[in-house]
Length: 249
Image (cartoon, rainbow, N blue to C red):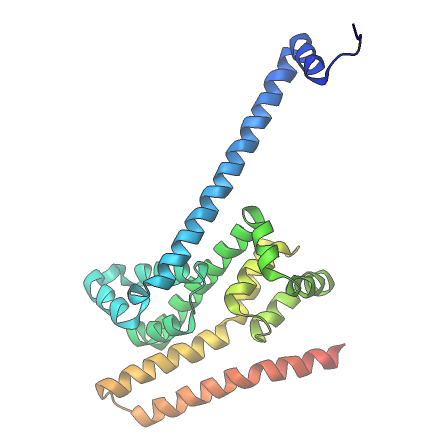
């Protein structure tokens, strides 16, 4: 009979000899299974939510949100921001929602609500990618991920600010992909909030001006010119930032 102990017998003997080690090992195993189940649950909810949102776009349209805001009274801003944040996580375009925010809440509050909601949704996507769905995001990002990783490695939060100002990557893709980089959560949130402000202000004012034009508000010509000026500035800003960035190298 062979005198070599089998691995399972050795593990059992070790657990008997050291009961605390055996209990600790079982706890770690249970913890890993729970984390795996939690990740699978989050990914499942994300997939179901994104699919539902793409197949049922009606609740995200301006008319539906306007009706919801009218019914909600003082809770309208909170509900609008919640819808906007979820839309960001579910890969829906945010520009239409920003226009809606301007039409519903005006240029100042609309900008605040849209910008806050967009940043909240972007942060949720960032956290999902960092702690739950890193493998899935890496597969979807493909070759583009290398440029983001290198950019953050070289420039840190400044690279986040740059790609927020200069749309080199789609907004929703960027939210998830940056979760795989080494940028800190605080730097990501602050750089995103500040550098998404110009675009948010321009689109919010455009939505506000559009509402005023449809309802026959006063000063339509001036508001239209202001909206076009803000859009032109937002369109030229990426080129200016790119030129300044090249000059600083």
